[in-house]
Picture 1 (tube, helix red, strand yellow):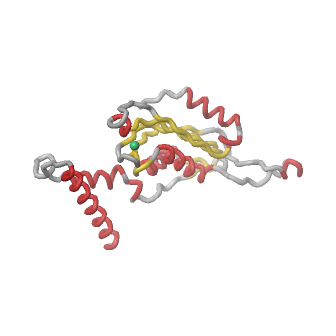
Picture 2: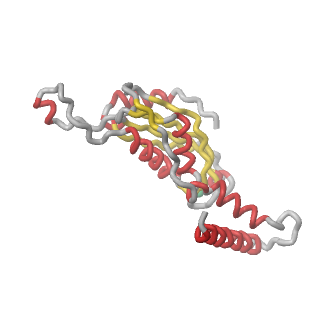
Picture 3: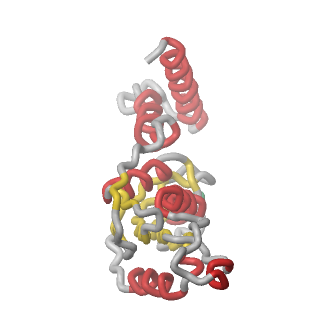
Length: 219
Ligand SMILES: [Zn+2]
């Protein structure tokens, strides 16, 4: 790591430590109490290195494997640990990511979790997080404008064939900003994002929705 990077990291950490100090002072707490000594440093480290890791780490490297299968692949129970951007309180849940390969490539299955984690570990809103995961996976497996199928006659070829491949993401999450403040309502918020054939082909969407319906959430 270069000196400039180190300085930048130190400066960012110092800003956060100062900030947490101000919060504790603002609450009228005694910063010399044995439980609060070192708290600003610990909190800054937890935020920078864990809760908001997605802001400083590079995008995950995704291994792709060649396939000639175009059936749906589904990964369920992907842990989602994020922070609501409006109140900076955690929201915790699970994602289901499904895709149909349209580029002749399969994604290494653990990489779907990596993509979800990368976008979750920062201040977020659940709707946007769902869309960002869907867009990221779609960029790897959806061919938005496939070449016409040469076996078709010119009439069919000239029609827009639509995308090849698709992505569906559903996230269920509990929001602490709703549970520990405001209405105090314990709720399971559900968001979904669809791309490619999940939008254009009713049978692909139906298969995905059927799968979501039968899912037993383990939150
Ligand atoms: Zn919130």
